[in-house]
Image: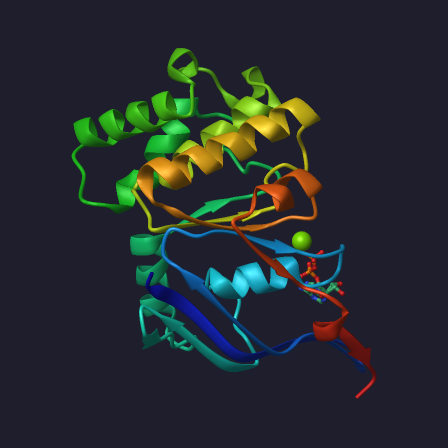
Length: 227
Ligand SMILES: Nc1ncnc2c1ncn2[C@@H]1O[C@H](COP(=O)(O)OP(=O)(O)O)[C@@H](O)[C@H]1O
Ligand SMILES: [Mg+2]
């Protein structure tokens, strides 16, 4: 299978006053198309940092990122926006839905960035909400939905423009056991049926178990020091 993401010797640190917190040290990894990969590791190990770099939402301090064999230039915001728009979908721990909009409107909103007619936007939104089992809740607002349903709306929103990769940061962290399992099953089904890749940061044992590839972010890339 094709390797479509390759990070080489990535370094990332945060500086808090005089203290330098090196989160990723010469970190390399690769992902293949259609992957269902989990970034696992304890809290504070750098899962979100790595996921954000992979999703081009954050910049590494050094190292290279190849996307489809082309180097990503983190200095070019416009190019990064294009990469994200054409390839990536995002799912967050806290769903990040707009409270005053219905499920349908939440899913349709990001589609306004593309050249779809109003009718196509709605059709796509309805279609993906059906795929996540929310056909009957199109006109409900987030506050009228359970946590599990809200996360399914967020997944529908992420897949609506048919991205190649979904990046999810702790997608089950705010859900009870049953809803968490439903969300894992849903992501697995989408991965199998559509071939969409998933890269998921999680410390949830059930999510890690579901991974086809598990990347453990451990002590080796967690270094804290004062220099
Ligand atoms: N914006 C930030 N500013 C300063 N330190 C940060 C920032 N984001 C993360 N960190 C630190 O980087 C380390 C890794 O954080 P994070 O990537 O969020 O880990 P995880 O997602 O595995 O819990 C932690 O020590 C955290 O405190
Ligand atoms: Mg995190």
